[in-house]
Each structure stands twice: as structure tokens, then as C-alpha cells.
Length: 230
Image 1: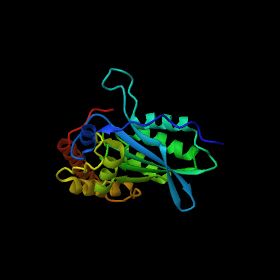
Image 2 (image 1 turned 120 degrees about the vertical axis):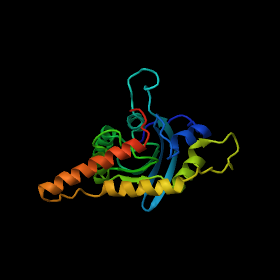
Image 3 (image 1 turned 90 degrees about the horizontal axis):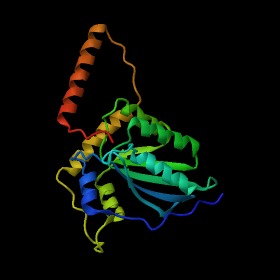
Image 4 (image 1 turned 180 degrees about the horizontal axis):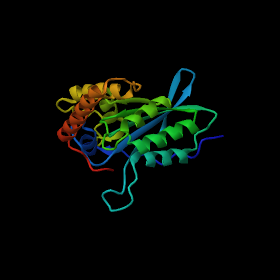
């Protein structure tokens, strides 16, 4: 079955929008998602530039029903009607990692579209909702590659999804502590993606461990500014 019609000429993100929303030291309210599609032929990855662009969540700033960026992207992908006889790799660069509900929808998509491989690079870990860890683990279990954005991915997005006002040689301006924060988040994500281990201990140890976990969770939430739910 042939693929559906390609979208019209894609738009690019302006520089300040990218810097405001993908800076991994900031906590913006919006979620931006950049995407690209490659056709897999043997060991070759053929870019399909007609299926390349970005979306963001909608509704929260207009008093409308909220729709997360991942769900908007899934709707857009459905309109492409990618050929099920071919294999594709879809890469997304997202300013916040998927919430539990969006992770579930992405898992469903992967189960229903075995001809698609998915890579997700996130600028930050979205931990507002309970169950976000399980959602990320479910994505990995479904075959998705989940990782934090590093300097390489930030530069790649800057060069491929941002409008530089006809000055394509504008270099990416890394912010202070970008690399350190990315490494910190990568270590945290690595721990989240590890399979859960059931540990048996005496009741006294359980209470101490639970109390320590609760204290650390509260400290973490007090330290980080939270964006409003999308």
C-alpha cells in the first residue's frame, strides 16, 4: 500500500522559541516535539524530508481542551498512511518526556505498527504525574529507544528545525551547564529504565526506606520548579 500524500512545505521554529523550550535548565509550560522519518532499506537510512517538522501541545493557553504534543503527532502520523510493507525509523526530539498517558498511546502505536521503529530524545524528564517511570519503561519494553538529549541532539535540532533567518551558518549557542545537566538527567533516566527489583527486608527497614524515599521525593519536588500540566 502506497504512503499517503506528503504534507505541505514544513515550517521552522524561531530561534528564541527553541531556546526557551528546549533549555534543559528551564521549566516552560509548553511541550515542543520535533520529528523526522527515515526509510530503512537494508543497512541504509534514507531521510524522508517531506515527513519532517514540529508540533506543540495546544489548548492550555486558550481555555480549550488540552491536547498533548505526542497525541497531535500521532494524529499527524496517521494521516501519512505509511506503507506497511516498508520499514521506517521515526525520531522525535521532545522538550519534555512523555507523561504516562502519552507513553501508553505511543506503546499502542508501536504494537499496531510493527513496521515502525521509534527513537525518543527528551530535553527533560516530565515527572509531574505519578507513574511516569512505568510509562517510560513501557516504551522501552515496546521497542522504543528512550534517551536524554545531549549537546549533539541540541545542535542537530538547531540545524534542522530552527529558522535562522537565511543565515544557515548561525552556530548553536549552548547555555551554561548544558552538558552537566544532560549527564545528570541521563543517569536519572538510566535508573528509571532499569527493571524493577523486588527487595525483601524486615518491617523496620521498610519504614526507614519508605520514609527516606518520601523525604527525597519531597526534596526533589521542592528543588525543581514545576510547569503546569499541559
